[in-house]
Length: 67
Image (cartoon, rainbow, N blue to C red; front, side, top):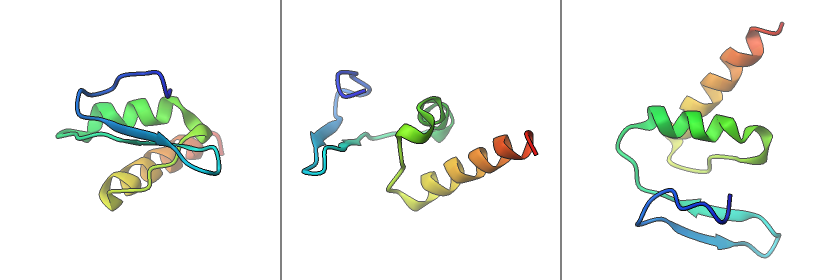
């Protein structure tokens, strides 16, 4: 993921704990949420809160199918 170019204005860096932080501008969250979900438990949306809630809702909906 660290080698991927998602957006020309993206900002990225490795944190001291070894995690990779990626900041990208976006207008429509639908495609971004699908890309985030593709990485499963290997990613976490830190902000904005609305995007985080959207990803959480999608993960809950997916998990509910397997209950």
